[in-house]
Length: 290
Image 1 (cartoon, helix red, strand yellow):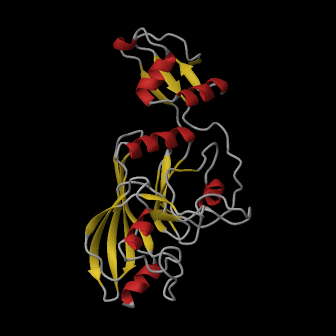
Image 2 (tube, helix red, strand yellow; image 1 turned 45 degrees about the horizontal axis):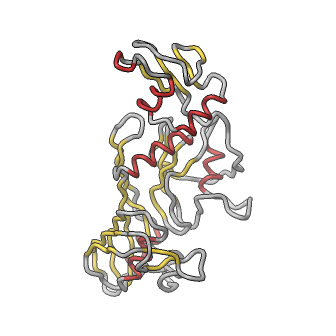
Image 3 (spheres, one colour; image 1 turned 180 degrees about the vertical axis):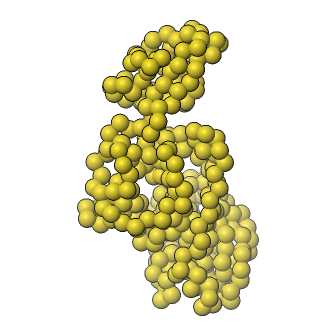
């Protein structure tokens, strides 16, 4: 991962190295402290420098945006379909029944374990968001903690847009679902619609009616745990195969949910990124068998 650098403009003549990094690269105080502990990670005109050093017009401030070391994640080779990659981040098309984060069983492959085996040097897997184990589709992963923070800023600015395809029971009306979500009492995992929950909004658009089921496009405008699954069950049209919020199905062994499209501005270059992933085989089969 290359160093990031900026030439100090005249208006910043009285600032410090830390000020320049905050303004130009949105570097947090936590990351500044990490940079100070890493030899050669922070440079002024090519020489190591303290964050409190003053700068002058024309100076070049540079820093290493990598983690500086490999995180202690067990590498477990596992085939992944990577649909986009550069030196800063990657996006993969996650298969069904693969967890994102390391599991209780240290030998069970997960996205992070597989990427630990795939990534070289000091690049580390930092999932920007998560998909449930059974959910397929597009998943964004930053290659350092700094890039993860920058992607979170993109999310919080409302510039990270993702749509899902789902196969649900019955044929719902296309609608905006505005229903707060919170924990179900007595469960550490399950969620439910409740008046004192966190605000949650999802747009449901019917794409194809198929008799006793339908293909819908779902757009989450918030990011609550199990949001789309809870919302569809709440309006009486749970996802097929959703054993937690609907019922098990002999046709599919997981919730029929797929992260199909993704768009965001690149956190470093500003380039617009737009990606898509085709429906997996099990959901295609559900459509054909209707």
